[in-house]
Image (cartoon, rainbow, N blue to C red; front, side, top):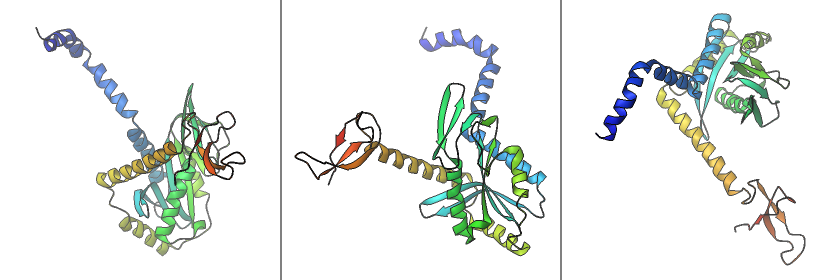
Length: 266
């Protein structure tokens, strides 16, 4: 009897009796994937905006991909109104969140597991800049907003424009100064509708590939400029004495604990 037949005899009855457990495990795995979590979080924001904001005043457009000088940028949601243009970044996360407006990297903590992620305000700043250039608007007429959905809890003070899902409607409606006329609102909305890249899977795949290339390039640059001993970044220093006095070299930022150096390639 060959190996395949033996495996069928052993595992065949288990699969036939417990197929639903296997299917459940697959479904749970899919639901936990970043893509599905992101789509679910964006769906929550879409539904809230659709049913809780006055459609005659607030115009929602989702999945806005714009061409930029470096490739493309993708915005989760844009809401256009007489009171400004709201650029919304959605984060579907759980656990404890640590971070402030100025930190480059924020922290997510789930029990003993710690994950670092990019400050979403910095991420959304790039979106607002791209939108500002595309629409030729004054920066004070564009509002950046980060919305956290899911079972997350901030353990540091939340920046004013970072809110939980149940609060983003209140943030938008708190802006009451008239910034655009109704005709300008319609013009801005039309320009976004027809000026963005077509919201297809192909557009999304191209943007994801663009982001991957950026991340890979950053990782490559970091690796090339990392200390060979401890992995920390290296900086250019100048020898103050000895035979190489006055010459520059790469020195580890972990000095004096780490004294690794590298020659500067010329």
